[in-house]
Length: 235
Image 1 (cartoon, rainbow, N blue to C red):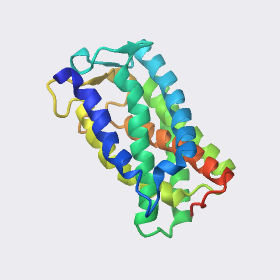
Image 2: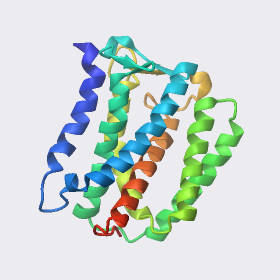
Image 3: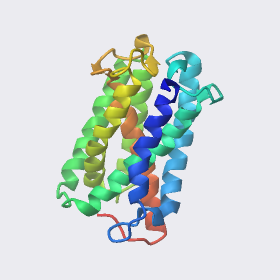
Image 4: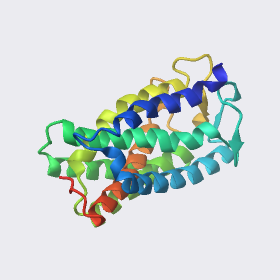
């Protein structure tokens, strides 16, 4: 049964957010399917191309012991599902917190914080051009943050910060399993010559910025579609 571990993680992470997507009292999240599809579709396409290139280059790879064996373009089925199902869960958390938690009043502070993150990422990336995962993850995240800061004036930074911070908890649990925190061998292995070698438990530090970029793309397009379709605007 261990060959279904990665698939189980994908489905378990998705199941509860999906079930609660149909409630109508607070959000009726599933009713925003056009915005959800736009955000997740663009993000998944971007990251699958990245994933394919890095898998082929040996930056990371997958342990056949914990996957079903169904593959396309060298990537397991579970990896395709990861970006859609985990991405959906993060987007659901992002939107739900906005409606269920008190609205944070630190929009300018959050915006400044992300500008600082972008600068630090860019500096570290430039200093580690010899480490492919470090350079790519941090540089791309920095570019993404700068683009949103410059051109998406209405982006809800405080909402994004809250959603990202809370989403890090389940993301870290799933990633902890995938990187060998609870198994004899990692489900996903990393070539440590291509990253900083700094781990949060078993998780490479770069994964936190990888995840931020995932959410930045999906939430950015999600918000754009909501605004274009004149749905209730997000503060």
